Length: 120
Image (cartoon, rainbow, N blue to C red; front, side, top):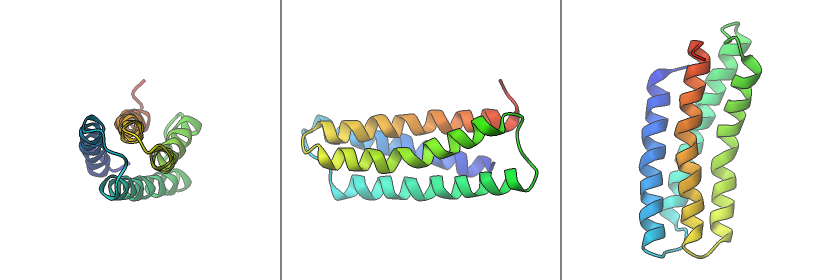
């Protein structure tokens, strides 16, 4: 795992979550800015997943490899599902769904770091 990339993903997801909350409070529907933000977050998560899988295949795997791969897969799935759900919901709850997804990403990335480092 690359600590700098994980930190950037955590900070980016939290900032995007804050923007989503502001949009929801303003009673606006999901817009292009939030969609682009989720897309950029997804690209970062795909890079992280690619690096993680490459390290596992290369022999640098944590003790809980299955859990690690599960968290990697989960982080990659969350933004697209949140984007589709938020686009389908044309009320303030669309950005609220995206905010919840963006709050889940830092938790999962943090757990990935813990698993990689062998912290219980």
